[in-house]
Length: 305
Image 1 (tube, rainbow, N blue to C red):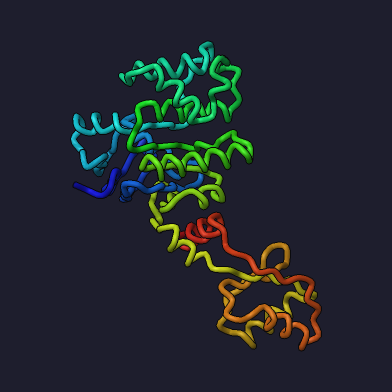
Image 2 (image 1 turned 180 degrees about the vertical axis):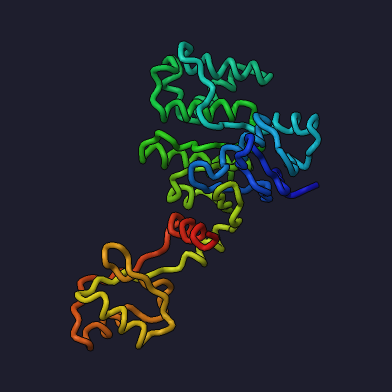
């Protein structure tokens, strides 16, 4: 049996003349949290809709729990909880009634499951509130409860922290880690809040204009996101010339705000401040930083243009 719960092989999806996905191949390992990263229009939601069966591949193949024939993959979807775009809520019904509706629809026995999922996702206190009066964050929590009601082996979540405040985001992240670690649920999620995704996922897939640019583990990403130096100096042009002459192996650029940024510096910060002082330049600022997931994604996109 395959170690992957999701396997996409050369998957393409066209909407008329628009190519939303272009020969995407990726794998999501059982027990992992996989973060799908991309700008609006990169193809994230299209890929998740393919998994849910809302749309179908133009070319290529998707396997879900090692099944790929349509009849078998429909059965595999019963082991998957989906929350794609806005959850399907009924405005005039209470949160409790909506979840009870989905419990019955999915054939999940026992009314106690509704209470369990409402409490698990932190929406229990709003159970008697009509959906139209719920905040965006509360609707997201209810959407997760709907996805969880069948006790799935796989969760597929599209922008799950949309509308949550900082404390809500922290609680949601903690909940996802609990579901993954205690219940062994595999999670595939997309988010435009990359700083949060960096703290959640074990593996990342980077999409841009329908193409998968890279798959990388969190450990490998940490190695690649090396630190860099931001230097502010009185004479930017002269200091740049000094760097080229004295430290020719260093890679640097001048940012729009006139900061000189040195990528993967090979020397201690004192070497750069000494270079400025020895040549009569005044150092206004020197800060060592770690590249973020956003920085890495932008750099990756720029490298394939």
